[in-house]
Length: 488
Figure 1 (cartoon, rainbow, N blue to C red):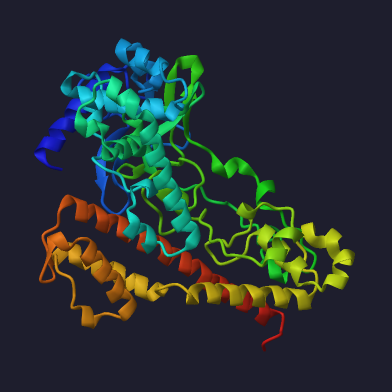
Figure 2 (figure 1 turned 90 degrees about the horizontal axis):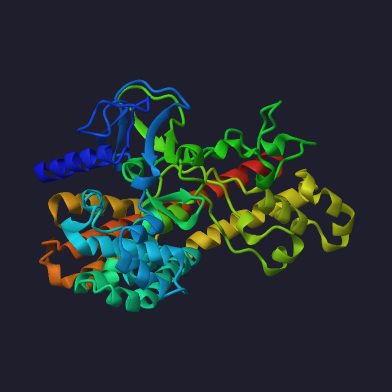
């Protein structure tokens, strides 16, 4: 950590302690120069989220590890109470959402600089984010999958629309030109999207000093819906097993380990599991797919138990089932969701026989060996055709990521003729986009180009993981067919 950053952090932790933020097990703490040190400390985890919080002692599951008083939370209410001009200006714009108000309030405080009471906290914010709204046209197209491209375009349009809606208010507040720009709005809305926490009185949530240092831990499903708890066999080996749909699963595995507690007027954080001294202490923000993580937080997980891959179905398939489209997906291990599997099973039954088996559709049982094979073969074919129309393969994506990581070390791209045409085409497109900083294959990277590479890497990693799920699905479906004795 650089000396200036370390001084800023020390100043921030002292400021937080003065506001009553504490990691002390007791409500009375004699420590005044830092809000941390009793249970947690700020540490760096290069391969696990970057800056985060580490345990300074052994911590037990369920233990209170951090408390943040209501007065230390940055909320729209708090900002308006402490700035009359901001409060009056906001009341003249009743059509703005609570999220827009908080984002403008954040920019208003940043505009004040050192005179803002939040200045020590604001200096801890990243200068930029990598959420989907921040993606440019090149990075959006690099996602390759139509659903992801559409989500990124929608996020970008939404951010620009909201910026246009708040421009008049920002001018009334006399913000400096740099805080009126779309770039500043993306920073503010990115801060709200990735750092706020739920509070019951404001849909926008709150910005929680120190509490937003926790890195993300994905909640995991304790038991696969594809396993019979008694026999422990895969679903396709069960003759008469009944499966639960995702909506029927026990939701206790999706606990949020932090929340505002009204009786003590504080935000409390609890240990989600046992931690040993030195471990990174993590927080579950909720259940998200990788695309949702990218959209709201600007990162994704290479191993995300809650990820989903969606594939287009035949038009008549949608009319056969009562599930919404969000339920029709493939799990990270390649197995179809309960809803998708049931839909495919029913579709695979001849039309003349569907009436006689409709009552079995929701049971989770195989309807017949023949329909099971038809369903599995359809899924294999759909996954293969989906993969075939994409510009690159999963191994090529992996190679491109390695090229980019190597480039960041030596600041030189390989010779175009040395790499496969699809990768060369994408690499040339990036160089063309950033031609002002590229000379003879060596890049003197501007901050704009560096950010573009980070977003590009995220797009490549997302599409690589998507393709891996489809490849796993092909393997899984082939195993089902083999078990049924069809291809032996």
